[in-house]
Amino acid sequence: MSSQDPRFSSPAALRNRDPIADLLRDVLPQNGTVLELASGSGEHVIHFAALFPELVWQPSDPSPEARASVEAWVEAEKLTNVLQPINVDASSETWPISRADAMIAINMIHISPWPATQGLLRHAGRLLPAGGPLILYGPYRRQGQPLVASNVEFDASLRARNPEWGIRLLEDVQSLAEQSGLSLTSVTELPANNLGVGFTRQ
Image (cartoon, rainbow, N blue to C red; front, side, top):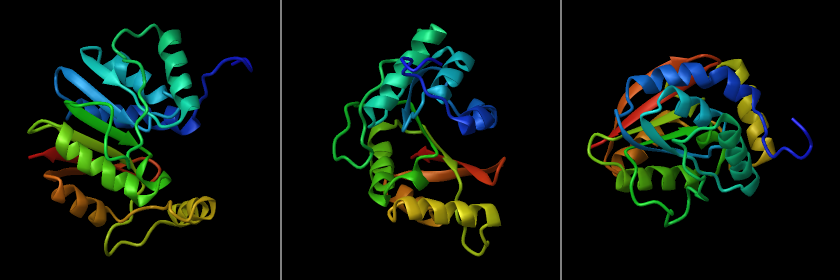
């Protein structure tokens, strides 16, 4: 890509998008709007939008550079089922969207302060309809299970970059989710020691 091209690319997104798509295939509604939090480069949302053309995809990111990258990817791929990316800070009290039929957040929870996770789950409880899924992807700690060495190193590097970041305990996330009316419905082992975690709005 040229220096003037606003698109950026994430090697991790290219590696994990197909395993995540396999997970989504089993839980997404047949139609409606899917809100993606922390869309980053936009490579996930364009991949999913092409795979699931019957759904409308709403990307979001608090970063203007990320939103510009999403827009450029959508234009380059000529996708008509992806909406203009919106500015969502997950920790905010208000979001610029009033409803979503499903929500996804990929590699967000460990690369953001804990209040972002609190906001994500609180808003999921408000925005999703009964039966609406929230799918999270990333590395997690689990009670009674030691972290694999690669995730110990990854966690240390995250905390060195920002003391408010780090790999979260899945049971803490589940407890918060339940307070917002979300039930844990699936935990799927995915490549590179990541988990796909599914919640459903009750």
